[in-house]
Amino acid sequence: MNVDETIAAIASAPGGAMRGIIRLSGPDVIGCLSGCFQSDDCRDLTGLDRPTVLAGLLQVSLPIGELPCDLYLWPGSRSYTRQPTAELHTIGSPPLLESALATVCAAGARVAEPGEFTMRAFLAGRLDLTQAEAVLGVIDAHSERELDVALSQLAGGLAGPLTRLRNELLDLLADVEAGLDFVEEDIEFISAEQLDGQLRDAAEQVNRLADQMTSRGESTGSFRIALIGWPNVGKSSLMNALAGHRAAIVAETAGTTRDYLTADIEIDGLKCRLIDTAGVAAENESEIAAKAQASTALQSRQAHVQLLCIDATRRINAWECEELERQQPEGRILVLTKTDGVRSTDLHFPAIETSSHTGQGLAKLRQAISQRIVDGLSEETSVVAGTAIRCRESLRLASSAIARAWQAVSDRIGDEIVAAEIRVALDEVGKVVGAVYTDDILDRIFSRFCIGK
Image 1 (cartoon, rainbow, N blue to C red):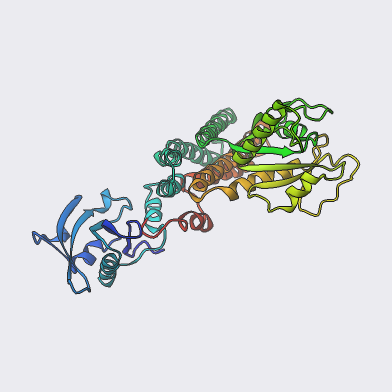
Image 2 (image 1 turned 90 degrees about the horizontal axis):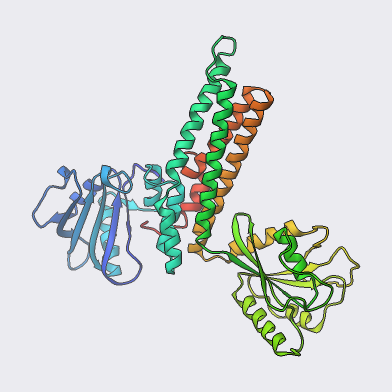
């Protein structure tokens, strides 16, 4: 993407409408429009230095010859991209909009790439990466909840504190490296006590910001993980193992769980709610059992991920065979439990082998749950969730680097190590606010936008 080129695109939604929009941005916006747009008052466009609205006609290569438009102009200092920007508002007919776009491109603009307007806003410092991704979340929101989450993210709140933290780390790094440059001189740029204190403060700040990002992610709600299966296959034990504490009563007697139980956990930065359901029974011998089965069916349908648990110490039964033979629902993971016991089941389906007693397979299961959640997210929700995961991971790495720097100061192992760890922290914080970025990160973010945004 060349930011010195003037770009144009249809910015309104596809299809016919009362009004359509052609958006332009770049250094030669005025030059492009001066040759093809004439305002009703014949005003010269070159001298405009503030936001302006003009009614007029745009020349088009159609039998009508001229297209009535309202032209909105913003100078670079007042625009989204920090470049001269314009919008032509006209009749929302697709052929008319295509002709209008062809006109401005013939006058010197080129068709914008997906997300290029927002990319320019990011490169100009109008948005950080978190907010840039939130723009896509707002555009694609299909529900009020998704819109609220995206608007919260777009409003920011983290960019300012993170930028201040980054500046403090830069100052700290400058002092440490100055000391290294003048190591043979009797000059102390920063004492060990000051360095220790500032690193402690930096660690507190980055951890606090990570907590804020986590709490922001909570507004999206928890992802529901339902454990389903025959009675006494180890669902409750598996939930306790995943939760890290006793959330469900475990007993050898089948049918111990009559109503569903829940436990909240976090997997790879995703808030999840484990749901231990009543075991599926072939026949409901009582009204209570029937209600338990109905509850299990409901929780299973509402879950983002289903863990179909099968006991490895016995042969599979008819219900399990039927479940395995039919097409597996999206979001279902087959889990083989009790694999530390005597193996009797030989599945011909891919399953994750686990043991609640030894911990075998739990890490792999968590990874599979996380991946299944991300894969199952709609595009607009994954923008917000993906942003939270990316930012939390960068803040976690920054926190670890600061902790290592502080430990290096405490152990007096050399300011070279301290400086190196501070640089790592700076890079990770910079990735969140966009001060440090790589082409692959930018490509992943902005390629998801539609043209015109």
